[in-house]
Amino acid sequence: MAKTNDNLVVIGSIMGAHGVRGDVRVKSFTAQPEDLFAYGPLLGKDGQVLITPVAARPAKNHFIVEPEERRQKEDWDSLKGTPLCVPRDVLPQPDEDEVYVDDLIGLSAIAEDGAPLGKVKAVLNHGASDLLEVTPSGGGKPVLIPFTLADVPDLNVDQGTVTIATFDVWADQSGKPDDRG
Image (cartoon, rainbow, N blue to C red; front, side, top):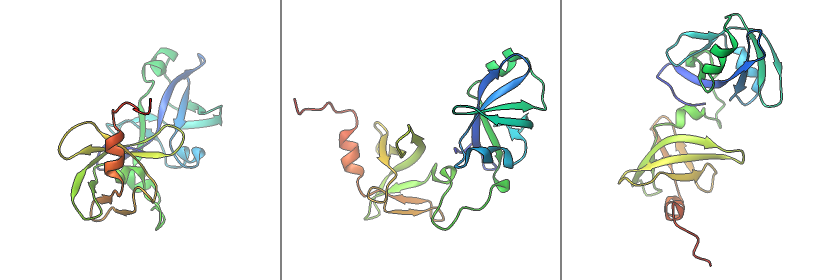
C-alpha cells in the first residue's frame, strides 16, 4: 500500500477491461488479496468512487470485477494503472509487530547513532521481499535497503524514524559496476 494523502490508502489498482460487457480487472495489494473488497467502494486518489464491486471472482494474479459503475471497455482500459484507495479509517489497526506500508513513506532514515541518512521515498516489492527506497539527505541516487531486521533493526512510526544499520553497504552498491572481472 502507498500513501496518497492523509486520509486515503492505496490497496489495489485497475488492470484494464475484462471482455466487452463492462467488467474490470483489478489487482489487490492487500496481504489477503480478497480483503480488497472488504472496505467498501474503491476510490480514486481524488476520493471519488471508481468501483463499487457487485461481484468479483479470482483470476491468475488479479480479480475480475463486475462493478456497479458501467463503463465501456475503452474507458476501463484508459484507467489501467489507476490506484484504488480506501479511507484510512476503514482499515483495521495493525498488530503490534506490524505496520502498513503507507506508514513507512516519508519516515526519516537514521543511522544507529542517530545521524540522518535521508527519507523513505517508497516501499518496493519486485517479488522477493520489500525494499525501502531511501532518498539520501545529501542528494544523489536513491538507495534500496532490504526491509529485514538485519538491515532495519528499529522502526518507530510515532517518532517518524526508521533505523538503517547497513546504509553504507547498500549505498556503495548503488550504480557501481561489478569489478570482480
